[in-house]
Length: 334
Image 1 (cartoon, one colour):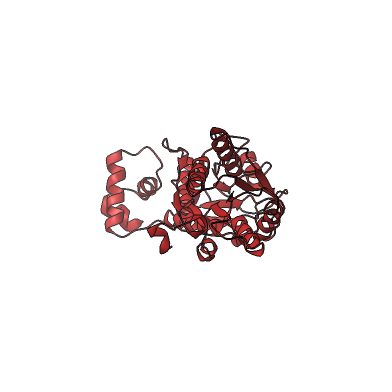
Image 2 (cartoon, helix red, strand yellow; image 1 turned 90 degrees about the horizontal axis):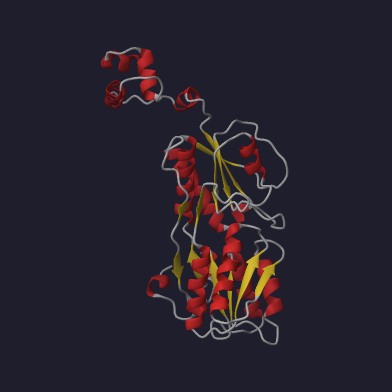
């Protein structure tokens, strides 16, 4: 820092203020100091810089899983890819991302943090309540149903459901059902709403089934064994998570149903397991990598009180595969 001060012809205090966005320096002086620092290859210590701004440099992230879901978020590919992308995006901006425990109980964080990302927030989420109590900025992935105006990154799940239902109807489906998880999250509500609107527009009776037992293949299997053995069973199923779709897939095979001729399957959230199933499962790609990155960028903007901090909608893409008929050319290589 002394070298920067000498080269720029200013005091150490001026260098510190210029590099840490403090003080009432003329903009020309601030730019000159930064230019000199860059020319000399000077990088202020990140921890010291954070402390100078009254920050810890730590961001928290939690996945608000249903209490009935065994295991953890790392068992679901969407969450793994989102968390990995978010961690990388945070590091690139000089922040550390810490994964908080997925629990609905009361707990405290033994370190200070500057903001939080909560994925699929549920009522009374512990990290959400803690951050609000401490006045920390929060960004959610999926809307906070108790506070819809909270900053969030999301997908248009209702539109994705309608697109999948249109696809299956064009392939001959007349009795599509929706298999939803019991998670009380915005994406489940959006899927149910989108499905019911689609059915109403076609004078169809909606059949919404809730998979008890969490976000697991087993939950999907048990639910599917129930409705696939009915006398007037569905001829198509859309699920709110790939693991549920894989359970339906397994149940259909166990009952001797041919896919897609006897039963079509499509799901929200793509995964390697969906791609490797035979037939492969048609899936809506929610782009968890982009979602994780956008959530971090939005949270940092909120922490820095940027004027352009606004909620963001991540585009989706449908991968058409064998479970709904002939796969699209681009899906063959998925």
